[in-house]
Image (cartoon, rainbow, N blue to C red; front, top):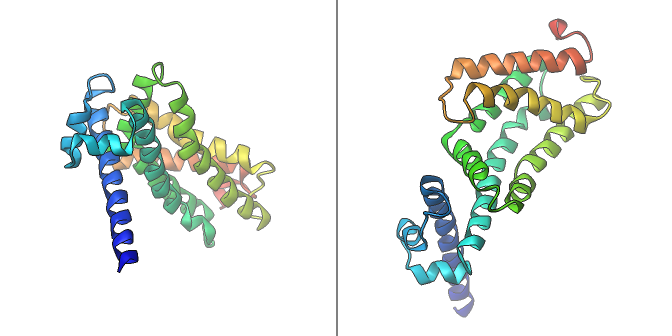
Length: 217
């Protein structure tokens, strides 16, 4: 019985921590770091203010953990979007376009845009947060993309001599144009435009890394 109570208490603590991190992201994104108050975050999370401090020693520590958690959540969605590359079937281009489109949809969703805006806004105050977000997000995503591309290369579907470089360029072909089109996440981009960017990115990628000419894939 004691073990069950301990497990329940531990689960409750984890749930409260996640609630605080989710609320903190909402408040930081809405108000910015300087204007965000711990009491406001506690109210958003539905916990007492001391509970926030029980989990995080101060607002700066909370901010860093919030950014890491937001990046990690975004990463998990993107990793799931890569799954079709495990078994892409005969039509590699269509599979790549579908993956690219899903990645762009996640890149342009409200939370992802809010995360980037918050990062840009607070980078001078928290220069270390850029590395935190990269380590919990972009860096691991690029590693996962590189792994999928390496497997496709071994299977003779691509000619990516350096899969890490190919992954970096694949992501740049997607996010570069989208950052410009969305005006750094401040302009909504419709699905048709995302699909057009995805198709163009994949076409260019396959012209360089395809095992045969892109129009033949």
